[in-house]
Length: 340
Image (cartoon, one colour):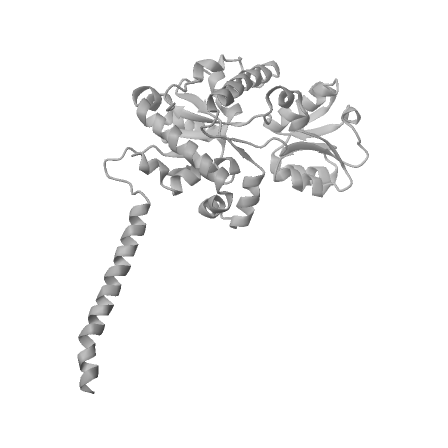
């Protein structure tokens, strides 16, 4: 080996060591950019599903570290149904949730005082509708016909019928799980079906040449409140909100920051949360564009609207025999912990 090559070896070693130290430093800088949970950090997990696009801003806030920035450790606890989520909050398995408000109102009617509602961060009017088989051209043609719907879609159906001077008593109503509707309308087991997306597209595809009878944007409720039939509502454990209002406020603050980021950066938001849904980012992005997400801007006026819609929906559910009593939903509303 030539002398000059031997002389260069120590320098090369130093260069490699320097590169390694630089790489480790870079990793350290990157790691420190995302806040890490500390052992003393309070843990307030959220119970949400990993199939509903309405939860995206909260997932963004988690993955971007917005909760940890405020000193709160929040992780997603996947819970499929809204009723199971509210039970988890009641049991203390999770501290808060975003869920369909019918489940919340149903628990209110039973006297469940374990939670408050404090926000609405997502809505998607126009994503729920009623589709009829060929030969049925209007809502009036549904008289005496078999019509399938479930949960909030039944409210949409009722609202459409009300606008046509009819009621649900004028049709042969069938309560059917959403996943069974496409097959039912394809086989002619029902004459029309009402459901939300993406199941609504499957219903339309199952009865080509059929008629769109209307969406939730054509209902009396939409004209009154501008929302879908049963939008989501964010709830929180009363124990947390009453005993640790500062922590509850941090949850709201980080959540609203997630909304702002999602609205400003939908492409990156889709990339960030695609893993929850096990879907390609482009699918998640398309979903984000079909939703409305509501954050800190104008939240007080927004909540005033949704507070009214909660009571309207509670009255409808009671009048139609869905719940034993119509609760005063205001008694379950608490927003004074949200930072001004």
